[in-house]
Length: 476
Image (cartoon, rainbow, N blue to C red; front, side):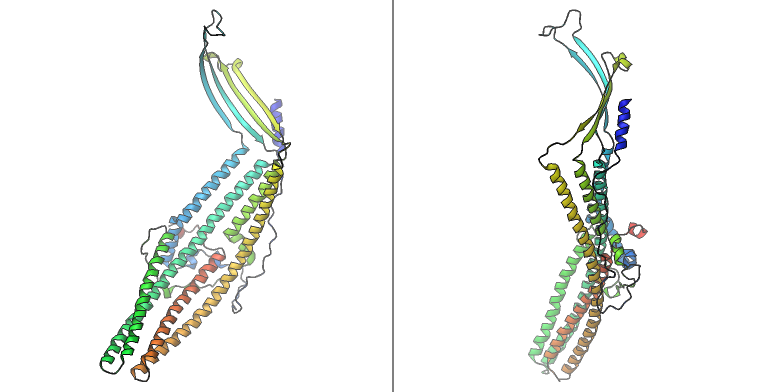
Protein backbone atom coordinates (compact mmCIF):
# COMPACT_ATOMS: atom_id res chain seq x y z
CA UNK A 1 0.00 0.00 0.00
CA UNK A 2 2.84 2.36 0.94
CA UNK A 3 4.59 1.64 -2.35
CA UNK A 4 1.43 2.41 -4.32
CA UNK A 5 1.03 5.73 -2.50
CA UNK A 6 4.67 6.56 -3.16
CA UNK A 7 4.19 5.85 -6.84
CA UNK A 8 1.17 8.17 -6.98
CA UNK A 9 3.10 10.94 -5.24
CA UNK A 10 6.04 10.58 -7.59
CA UNK A 11 3.72 10.76 -10.59
CA UNK A 12 2.08 13.87 -9.16
CA UNK A 13 5.47 15.53 -8.80
CA UNK A 14 6.12 14.92 -12.48
CA UNK A 15 4.43 18.15 -13.43
CA UNK A 16 7.39 20.40 -14.10
CA UNK A 17 9.71 20.38 -17.08
CA UNK A 18 13.02 22.16 -16.76
CA UNK A 19 14.34 24.21 -19.64
CA UNK A 20 12.82 27.10 -21.60
CA UNK A 21 9.41 26.85 -23.23
CA UNK A 22 9.49 27.66 -26.94
CA UNK A 23 8.70 31.17 -28.12
CA UNK A 24 8.95 32.25 -31.75
CA UNK A 25 11.89 34.64 -32.21
CA UNK A 26 11.21 38.24 -33.19
CA UNK A 27 11.28 38.73 -36.96
CA UNK A 28 11.93 41.81 -39.06
CA UNK A 29 9.02 41.52 -41.49
CA UNK A 30 8.83 44.11 -44.31
CA UNK A 31 5.58 45.97 -44.79
CA UNK A 32 5.42 45.08 -48.48
CA UNK A 33 7.36 43.06 -51.04
CA UNK A 34 9.88 44.99 -53.08
CA UNK A 35 8.99 45.05 -56.78
CA UNK A 36 10.55 46.42 -59.93
CA UNK A 37 10.54 50.21 -60.10
CA UNK A 38 8.44 50.06 -63.25
CA UNK A 39 5.81 47.75 -61.75
CA UNK A 40 2.70 49.92 -61.34
CA UNK A 41 0.27 47.13 -60.48
CA UNK A 42 -1.76 47.27 -57.27
CA UNK A 43 -0.19 44.63 -55.01
CA UNK A 44 -1.93 45.64 -51.79
CA UNK A 45 -4.47 42.81 -51.82
CA UNK A 46 -4.42 40.43 -48.86
CA UNK A 47 -5.19 37.41 -51.03
CA UNK A 48 -2.23 35.63 -52.55
CA UNK A 49 -1.37 33.84 -55.77
CA UNK A 50 -0.05 31.02 -53.56
CA UNK A 51 -3.58 30.33 -52.29
CA UNK A 52 -4.47 28.98 -55.72
CA UNK A 53 -3.94 25.27 -56.31
CA UNK A 54 -1.33 24.42 -58.91
CA UNK A 55 -3.97 23.17 -61.37
CA UNK A 56 -5.55 26.63 -61.24
CA UNK A 57 -2.28 28.31 -62.16
CA UNK A 58 -0.99 25.81 -64.74
CA UNK A 59 -4.01 25.16 -66.94
CA UNK A 60 -2.48 23.04 -69.73
CA UNK A 61 -4.19 19.62 -69.28
CA UNK A 62 -1.02 17.77 -70.28
CA UNK A 63 1.05 19.69 -67.75
CA UNK A 64 -1.56 19.01 -65.08
CA UNK A 65 -1.40 15.31 -65.88
CA UNK A 66 2.39 15.31 -65.64
CA UNK A 67 2.41 17.13 -62.29
CA UNK A 68 -0.15 14.71 -60.84
CA UNK A 69 1.95 11.79 -62.10
CA UNK A 70 5.13 13.23 -60.63
CA UNK A 71 3.49 13.78 -57.25
CA UNK A 72 2.69 10.07 -57.23
CA UNK A 73 5.66 8.41 -58.89
CA UNK A 74 8.64 10.73 -58.41
CA UNK A 75 11.53 9.18 -56.51
CA UNK A 76 11.94 12.40 -54.53
CA UNK A 77 8.34 12.11 -53.35
CA UNK A 78 8.85 8.49 -52.33
CA UNK A 79 12.07 9.36 -50.48
CA UNK A 80 10.31 12.20 -48.64
CA UNK A 81 7.40 9.92 -47.73
CA UNK A 82 9.79 7.32 -46.33
CA UNK A 83 11.46 10.00 -44.21
CA UNK A 84 8.09 10.96 -42.75
CA UNK A 85 7.49 7.32 -41.83
CA UNK A 86 10.90 7.22 -40.16
CA UNK A 87 10.12 10.36 -38.17
CA UNK A 88 6.75 8.92 -37.12
CA UNK A 89 8.43 5.73 -35.93
CA UNK A 90 11.11 7.68 -34.07
CA UNK A 91 8.44 9.79 -32.35
CA UNK A 92 6.57 6.63 -31.36
CA UNK A 93 9.74 5.15 -29.84
CA UNK A 94 10.36 8.34 -27.86
CA UNK A 95 6.74 8.50 -26.68
CA UNK A 96 6.99 4.93 -25.36
CA UNK A 97 9.22 6.20 -22.52
CA UNK A 98 6.10 7.59 -20.84
CA UNK A 99 5.00 4.01 -20.10
CA UNK A 100 6.70 1.18 -18.21
CA UNK A 101 7.97 -1.82 -20.11
CA UNK A 102 6.15 -4.89 -18.81
CA UNK A 103 7.12 -8.46 -19.67
CA UNK A 104 5.99 -11.93 -18.76
CA UNK A 105 7.58 -15.36 -18.78
CA UNK A 106 7.41 -18.91 -17.51
CA UNK A 107 9.87 -21.74 -17.06
CA UNK A 108 10.10 -25.28 -15.74
CA UNK A 109 13.42 -26.65 -14.49
CA UNK A 110 14.56 -30.19 -13.68
CA UNK A 111 17.86 -30.72 -11.81
CA UNK A 112 19.63 -33.80 -10.43
CA UNK A 113 22.40 -33.71 -7.83
CA UNK A 114 25.12 -36.34 -8.00
CA UNK A 115 24.85 -38.90 -5.18
CA UNK A 116 28.60 -39.49 -5.38
CA UNK A 117 29.63 -35.86 -5.61
CA UNK A 118 31.45 -33.82 -2.97
CA UNK A 119 28.21 -32.34 -1.61
CA UNK A 120 26.40 -35.67 -1.61
CA UNK A 121 22.70 -36.32 -1.08
CA UNK A 122 21.30 -37.39 2.30
CA UNK A 123 19.79 -40.89 2.38
CA UNK A 124 16.12 -41.01 1.47
CA UNK A 125 16.27 -37.68 -0.44
CA UNK A 126 15.44 -37.76 -4.12
CA UNK A 127 18.49 -36.44 -5.98
CA UNK A 128 16.22 -35.17 -8.79
CA UNK A 129 14.20 -32.01 -8.21
CA UNK A 130 11.75 -30.06 -10.34
CA UNK A 131 10.27 -26.56 -9.94
CA UNK A 132 8.40 -24.10 -12.13
CA UNK A 133 7.94 -20.32 -12.25
CA UNK A 134 5.46 -17.93 -13.81
CA UNK A 135 6.35 -14.25 -13.53
CA UNK A 136 5.80 -10.72 -14.77
CA UNK A 137 8.47 -8.04 -14.79
CA UNK A 138 8.63 -4.28 -15.03
CA UNK A 139 11.98 -3.11 -16.35
CA UNK A 140 13.57 0.06 -15.06
CA UNK A 141 10.96 2.80 -15.49
CA UNK A 142 12.02 6.42 -15.14
CA UNK A 143 9.63 8.75 -13.32
CA UNK A 144 9.65 11.94 -15.38
CA UNK A 145 10.13 14.31 -12.45
CA UNK A 146 12.04 16.97 -14.35
CA UNK A 147 10.42 16.63 -17.75
CA UNK A 148 13.31 14.96 -19.58
CA UNK A 149 10.98 12.53 -21.32
CA UNK A 150 8.46 15.26 -22.06
CA UNK A 151 11.17 17.41 -23.62
CA UNK A 152 12.40 14.42 -25.62
CA UNK A 153 8.85 13.80 -26.82
CA UNK A 154 8.49 17.50 -27.68
CA UNK A 155 11.69 17.35 -29.73
CA UNK A 156 10.61 14.16 -31.52
CA UNK A 157 7.22 15.63 -32.38
CA UNK A 158 8.87 18.78 -33.70
CA UNK A 159 11.19 16.69 -35.86
CA UNK A 160 8.16 14.85 -37.22
CA UNK A 161 6.44 18.12 -38.10
CA UNK A 162 9.67 19.39 -39.65
CA UNK A 163 9.89 16.25 -41.77
CA UNK A 164 6.27 16.61 -42.88
CA UNK A 165 6.92 20.25 -43.84
CA UNK A 166 10.06 19.14 -45.68
CA UNK A 167 7.89 16.67 -47.60
CA UNK A 168 5.64 19.57 -48.57
CA UNK A 169 8.72 21.49 -49.73
CA UNK A 170 9.63 18.54 -51.94
CA UNK A 171 6.11 18.58 -53.41
CA UNK A 172 6.29 22.33 -54.00
CA UNK A 173 9.71 22.09 -55.63
CA UNK A 174 8.63 19.15 -57.76
CA UNK A 175 5.61 21.05 -59.12
CA UNK A 176 7.92 23.90 -60.13
CA UNK A 177 10.50 21.52 -61.62
CA UNK A 178 7.94 19.66 -63.75
CA UNK A 179 6.42 22.93 -64.97
CA UNK A 180 9.88 24.30 -65.76
CA UNK A 181 10.97 21.17 -67.61
CA UNK A 182 7.71 20.93 -69.57
CA UNK A 183 7.65 24.59 -70.59
CA UNK A 184 11.32 24.37 -71.49
CA UNK A 185 10.56 21.39 -73.70
CA UNK A 186 7.77 23.26 -75.48
CA UNK A 187 10.09 26.22 -75.99
CA UNK A 188 12.70 23.96 -77.58
CA UNK A 189 10.00 22.53 -79.85
CA UNK A 190 9.23 26.11 -80.85
CA UNK A 191 12.92 26.80 -81.50
CA UNK A 192 13.00 23.71 -83.70
CA UNK A 193 10.02 25.03 -85.66
CA UNK A 194 11.84 28.34 -86.14
CA UNK A 195 15.01 26.57 -87.28
CA UNK A 196 13.16 24.27 -89.68
CA UNK A 197 11.13 27.14 -91.12
CA UNK A 198 14.32 29.16 -91.55
CA UNK A 199 16.03 26.18 -93.16
CA UNK A 200 13.17 25.84 -95.65
CA UNK A 201 13.31 29.53 -96.58
CA UNK A 202 17.08 29.49 -96.91
CA UNK A 203 17.06 26.33 -99.02
CA UNK A 204 14.67 27.97 -101.43
CA UNK A 205 16.87 31.04 -101.44
CA UNK A 206 19.93 28.91 -102.19
CA UNK A 207 18.13 27.28 -105.11
CA UNK A 208 17.16 30.69 -106.47
CA UNK A 209 20.65 32.13 -105.98
CA UNK A 210 22.24 29.13 -107.68
CA UNK A 211 19.90 29.60 -110.66
CA UNK A 212 20.74 33.30 -110.80
CA UNK A 213 24.45 32.48 -110.74
CA UNK A 214 24.07 29.98 -113.54
CA UNK A 215 22.18 32.63 -115.50
CA UNK A 216 24.98 35.11 -114.98
CA UNK A 217 22.91 37.42 -112.80
CA UNK A 218 24.55 36.54 -109.43
CA UNK A 219 28.10 35.78 -108.44
CA UNK A 220 29.55 32.61 -106.98
CA UNK A 221 30.12 34.59 -103.79
CA UNK A 222 26.36 34.95 -103.44
CA UNK A 223 25.98 31.18 -103.74
CA UNK A 224 28.57 30.61 -101.03
CA UNK A 225 26.84 33.08 -98.72
CA UNK A 226 23.50 31.34 -99.34
CA UNK A 227 25.14 28.01 -98.50
CA UNK A 228 26.41 29.53 -95.24
CA UNK A 229 22.85 30.43 -94.28
CA UNK A 230 21.61 26.90 -95.03
CA UNK A 231 24.47 25.30 -93.10
CA UNK A 232 23.82 27.55 -90.11
CA UNK A 233 20.16 26.50 -90.03
CA UNK A 234 21.11 22.82 -90.38
CA UNK A 235 23.55 23.10 -87.45
CA UNK A 236 20.90 24.80 -85.32
CA UNK A 237 18.39 22.02 -86.11
CA UNK A 238 20.86 19.30 -85.09
CA UNK A 239 21.76 21.07 -81.85
CA UNK A 240 18.12 21.75 -81.00
CA UNK A 241 17.29 18.06 -81.47
CA UNK A 242 20.01 17.24 -78.97
CA UNK A 243 18.65 19.70 -76.44
CA UNK A 244 15.08 18.45 -76.93
CA UNK A 245 16.04 14.82 -76.36
CA UNK A 246 17.98 15.69 -73.21
CA UNK A 247 15.08 17.84 -71.96
CA UNK A 248 12.71 14.93 -72.57
CA UNK A 249 14.93 12.71 -70.43
CA UNK A 250 14.93 15.30 -67.64
CA UNK A 251 11.14 15.50 -67.67
CA UNK A 252 10.78 11.71 -67.66
CA UNK A 253 13.06 11.36 -64.64
CA UNK A 254 10.95 13.91 -62.75
CA UNK A 255 7.91 11.78 -63.59
CA UNK A 256 9.59 8.63 -62.32
CA UNK A 257 9.87 7.20 -65.83
CA UNK A 258 12.72 5.83 -67.87
CA UNK A 259 14.11 8.11 -70.61
CA UNK A 260 11.72 8.47 -73.55
CA UNK A 261 9.68 10.93 -75.58
CA UNK A 262 6.76 12.36 -73.53
CA UNK A 263 3.63 13.72 -75.12
CA UNK A 264 3.03 17.43 -75.58
CA UNK A 265 -0.13 19.35 -74.91
CA UNK A 266 -0.88 22.85 -76.11
CA UNK A 267 1.76 24.61 -78.20
CA UNK A 268 4.33 26.91 -76.68
CA UNK A 269 2.75 30.12 -77.97
CA UNK A 270 -0.59 29.15 -76.36
CA UNK A 271 0.87 28.78 -72.87
CA UNK A 272 -0.46 31.47 -70.52
CA UNK A 273 0.50 31.95 -66.88
CA UNK A 274 -0.79 35.42 -66.11
CA UNK A 275 -0.36 36.82 -62.62
CA UNK A 276 -3.77 38.32 -61.89
CA UNK A 277 -3.67 37.72 -58.11
CA UNK A 278 -1.36 39.85 -55.92
CA UNK A 279 1.38 38.20 -53.83
CA UNK A 280 -0.36 38.85 -50.51
CA UNK A 281 1.06 40.13 -47.23
CA UNK A 282 4.70 39.40 -46.30
CA UNK A 283 3.63 38.36 -42.79
CA UNK A 284 1.51 35.53 -44.25
CA UNK A 285 4.57 34.09 -45.98
CA UNK A 286 5.91 32.77 -42.66
CA UNK A 287 2.97 30.41 -42.21
CA UNK A 288 2.57 29.55 -45.89
CA UNK A 289 6.03 28.43 -46.95
CA UNK A 290 6.82 24.86 -45.86
CA UNK A 291 10.58 25.48 -45.72
CA UNK A 292 10.01 28.16 -43.06
CA UNK A 293 7.85 25.73 -41.08
CA UNK A 294 10.61 23.15 -41.34
CA UNK A 295 13.17 25.61 -39.96
CA UNK A 296 10.85 26.62 -37.12
CA UNK A 297 10.10 23.04 -36.07
CA UNK A 298 13.82 22.31 -36.04
CA UNK A 299 14.13 25.34 -33.76
CA UNK A 300 11.42 23.90 -31.49
CA UNK A 301 13.34 20.61 -31.32
CA UNK A 302 16.59 22.40 -30.49
CA UNK A 303 14.83 24.31 -27.70
CA UNK A 304 13.48 21.05 -26.24
CA UNK A 305 16.98 19.55 -26.34
CA UNK A 306 18.08 22.26 -23.88
CA UNK A 307 15.46 20.98 -21.44
CA UNK A 308 16.75 17.44 -21.80
CA UNK A 309 20.29 18.60 -21.13
CA UNK A 310 19.20 20.51 -18.01
CA UNK A 311 17.18 17.56 -16.69
CA UNK A 312 20.36 15.47 -16.66
CA UNK A 313 21.65 17.58 -13.72
CA UNK A 314 18.83 16.45 -11.41
CA UNK A 315 18.27 13.18 -9.56
CA UNK A 316 16.87 10.34 -11.61
CA UNK A 317 14.16 8.16 -10.05
CA UNK A 318 13.50 4.74 -11.56
CA UNK A 319 11.09 2.01 -10.60
CA UNK A 320 11.60 -1.73 -11.03
CA UNK A 321 9.28 -4.57 -10.15
CA UNK A 322 8.86 -8.32 -10.27
CA UNK A 323 5.87 -10.49 -9.46
CA UNK A 324 5.41 -14.21 -9.94
CA UNK A 325 4.75 -17.63 -8.48
CA UNK A 326 7.22 -20.46 -7.96
CA UNK A 327 6.69 -24.02 -6.73
CA UNK A 328 8.27 -27.45 -6.87
CA UNK A 329 4.86 -28.93 -7.51
CA UNK A 330 2.72 -27.90 -10.43
CA UNK A 331 -0.44 -28.26 -8.31
CA UNK A 332 0.87 -25.67 -5.81
CA UNK A 333 2.13 -23.20 -8.45
CA UNK A 334 -0.76 -20.74 -8.22
CA UNK A 335 -1.38 -20.92 -4.44
CA UNK A 336 -0.77 -17.98 -2.14
CA UNK A 337 2.30 -19.55 -0.58
CA UNK A 338 4.01 -19.71 -4.00
CA UNK A 339 3.92 -15.95 -4.59
CA UNK A 340 7.17 -14.04 -4.98
CA UNK A 341 7.51 -10.34 -5.73
CA UNK A 342 9.85 -7.41 -5.52
CA UNK A 343 9.26 -3.68 -6.03
CA UNK A 344 11.38 -0.69 -5.24
CA UNK A 345 12.38 2.77 -6.46
CA UNK A 346 15.98 3.72 -7.09
CA UNK A 347 17.45 7.20 -7.00
CA UNK A 348 20.65 8.18 -8.77
CA UNK A 349 22.29 11.55 -9.08
CA UNK A 350 25.42 12.57 -10.96
CA UNK A 351 28.11 13.89 -8.62
CA UNK A 352 31.09 14.20 -10.95
CA UNK A 353 31.07 13.76 -14.73
CA UNK A 354 34.21 15.63 -15.69
CA UNK A 355 32.18 18.47 -17.21
CA UNK A 356 30.21 16.22 -19.54
CA UNK A 357 26.79 17.41 -18.39
CA UNK A 358 27.71 21.09 -18.55
CA UNK A 359 29.33 20.56 -21.92
CA UNK A 360 26.21 18.82 -23.20
CA UNK A 361 24.09 21.77 -22.02
CA UNK A 362 26.41 24.25 -23.73
CA UNK A 363 26.21 22.16 -26.89
CA UNK A 364 22.40 22.17 -26.82
CA UNK A 365 22.32 25.92 -26.26
CA UNK A 366 24.78 26.53 -29.12
CA UNK A 367 22.72 24.36 -31.44
CA UNK A 368 19.64 26.34 -30.47
CA UNK A 369 21.40 29.59 -31.37
CA UNK A 370 22.36 28.08 -34.72
CA UNK A 371 18.75 27.03 -35.29
CA UNK A 372 17.55 30.57 -34.46
CA UNK A 373 19.94 32.05 -36.99
CA UNK A 374 18.98 29.45 -39.58
CA UNK A 375 15.29 30.15 -39.04
CA UNK A 376 15.73 33.91 -39.35
CA UNK A 377 17.90 33.43 -42.43
CA UNK A 378 15.26 31.21 -44.03
CA UNK A 379 12.55 33.80 -43.39
CA UNK A 380 14.62 36.66 -44.74
CA UNK A 381 15.70 34.64 -47.76
CA UNK A 382 12.04 33.90 -48.52
CA UNK A 383 11.34 37.64 -48.74
CA UNK A 384 14.27 38.00 -51.13
CA UNK A 385 13.01 35.14 -53.32
CA UNK A 386 9.55 36.70 -53.61
CA UNK A 387 11.03 40.10 -54.41
CA UNK A 388 13.37 38.56 -57.00
CA UNK A 389 10.44 36.75 -58.59
CA UNK A 390 8.26 39.87 -58.71
CA UNK A 391 11.09 41.84 -60.29
CA UNK A 392 11.82 39.02 -62.74
CA UNK A 393 8.18 38.81 -63.78
CA UNK A 394 7.92 42.53 -64.48
CA UNK A 395 11.28 42.84 -66.22
CA UNK A 396 10.89 39.71 -68.36
CA UNK A 397 7.49 40.99 -69.52
CA UNK A 398 9.11 44.26 -70.53
CA UNK A 399 12.00 42.48 -72.26
CA UNK A 400 9.63 40.17 -74.14
CA UNK A 401 7.58 43.13 -75.37
CA UNK A 402 10.69 44.96 -76.58
CA UNK A 403 12.01 41.77 -78.17
CA UNK A 404 8.76 41.35 -80.11
CA UNK A 405 9.27 44.82 -81.54
CA UNK A 406 12.91 44.04 -82.27
CA UNK A 407 12.02 40.79 -84.05
CA UNK A 408 9.38 42.49 -86.15
CA UNK A 409 11.90 45.16 -87.17
CA UNK A 410 14.42 42.45 -88.19
CA UNK A 411 11.70 40.66 -90.16
CA UNK A 412 10.89 43.84 -92.07
CA UNK A 413 14.58 44.53 -92.67
CA UNK A 414 15.09 41.00 -94.02
CA UNK A 415 12.13 41.30 -96.40
CA UNK A 416 13.49 44.61 -97.65
CA UNK A 417 17.01 43.20 -98.10
CA UNK A 418 15.67 40.31 -100.20
CA UNK A 419 13.64 42.73 -102.32
CA UNK A 420 16.68 44.97 -102.83
CA UNK A 421 18.84 41.97 -103.74
CA UNK A 422 16.33 40.61 -106.24
CA UNK A 423 16.15 44.08 -107.77
CA UNK A 424 19.92 44.24 -108.09
CA UNK A 425 20.23 47.20 -105.75
CA UNK A 426 22.44 45.49 -103.14
CA UNK A 427 24.67 42.45 -102.72
CA UNK A 428 23.75 39.19 -101.08
CA UNK A 429 25.93 40.17 -98.12
CA UNK A 430 23.10 42.42 -96.91
CA UNK A 431 20.66 39.51 -97.15
CA UNK A 432 23.10 37.27 -95.27
CA UNK A 433 23.45 39.76 -92.43
CA UNK A 434 19.72 40.38 -92.04
CA UNK A 435 18.82 36.67 -92.26
CA UNK A 436 21.26 35.85 -89.48
CA UNK A 437 20.00 38.72 -87.32
CA UNK A 438 16.38 37.69 -87.83
CA UNK A 439 17.11 34.09 -86.89
CA UNK A 440 18.86 35.21 -83.70
CA UNK A 441 16.04 37.62 -82.88
CA UNK A 442 13.37 34.92 -83.27
CA UNK A 443 15.27 32.53 -81.00
CA UNK A 444 15.80 35.30 -78.45
CA UNK A 445 12.09 36.09 -78.52
CA UNK A 446 11.23 32.43 -77.86
CA UNK A 447 13.61 32.40 -74.90
CA UNK A 448 12.15 35.70 -73.63
CA UNK A 449 8.67 34.19 -73.68
CA UNK A 450 9.96 31.17 -71.78
CA UNK A 451 11.63 33.42 -69.18
CA UNK A 452 8.34 35.24 -68.66
CA UNK A 453 6.47 31.96 -68.11
CA UNK A 454 9.15 30.61 -65.77
CA UNK A 455 9.11 33.84 -63.75
CA UNK A 456 5.46 33.09 -62.92
CA UNK A 457 6.38 29.54 -61.87
CA UNK A 458 9.19 30.92 -59.70
CA UNK A 459 6.87 33.52 -58.14
CA UNK A 460 4.25 30.89 -57.38
CA UNK A 461 6.84 28.65 -55.72
CA UNK A 462 8.50 31.47 -53.76
CA UNK A 463 5.11 32.50 -52.34
CA UNK A 464 4.64 28.99 -50.96
CA UNK A 465 2.21 27.63 -53.55
CA UNK A 466 2.28 24.29 -55.26
CA UNK A 467 2.21 21.70 -52.47
CA UNK A 468 -1.48 21.71 -51.49
CA UNK A 469 -3.43 18.48 -51.85
CA UNK A 470 -7.02 17.45 -51.40
CA UNK A 471 -8.41 17.97 -54.89
CA UNK A 472 -9.42 14.93 -56.90
CA UNK A 473 -7.17 16.09 -59.71
CA UNK A 474 -4.15 15.69 -57.46
CA UNK A 475 -5.27 12.21 -56.47
CA UNK A 476 -5.98 10.84 -59.95
